[in-house]
Length: 107
Image 1 (cartoon, rainbow, N blue to C red):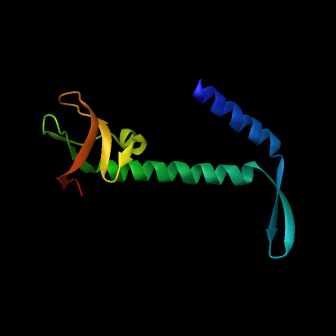
Image 2 (cartoon, rainbow, N blue to C red):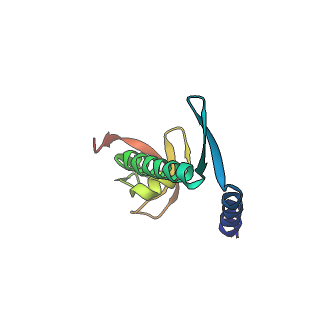
């Protein structure tokens, strides 16, 4: 239900943006909304991808079984965190909770 509400809100906002006024060196231009939205979305997607790759390059240790693992990059990019601890599901024991980075990393 939350996703549907979010998508409808974004669609409503996008329909309101038919054009944007851009000031460039004391000249005013009318540009379509998508000429601003598309680069912003691409920049956010690239940042999310490389951030997830960087976080996934670190090795995390499960507090229950003590085994180390590397999370998938999309799980790492979407994980909840407090400082360097992140919420992951351990592939060995199945515990889901905060995991701390171990001393080793793939770097």
